[in-house]
Image 1 (cartoon, rainbow, N blue to C red):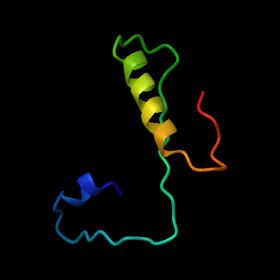
Image 2: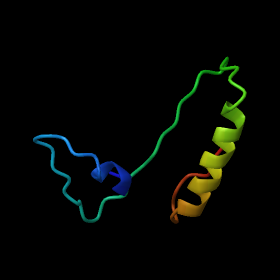
Image 3: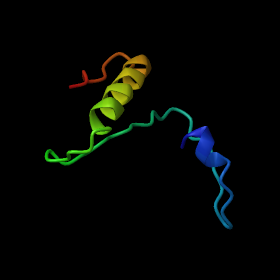
Image 4: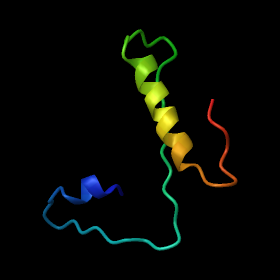
Length: 61
């Protein structure tokens, strides 16, 4: 989980690092979503993902 989420304190929940595992992020949105912020959000998400790709990852659409 992202470090920012680890700062959230929940009773009975403990964050434990997992060695040797890569995290993945998947986004989904409705094709008819007319929110004017969506294209900008997707552009930024793609830019961030491109800087995080490792060899063997699939290209982003």
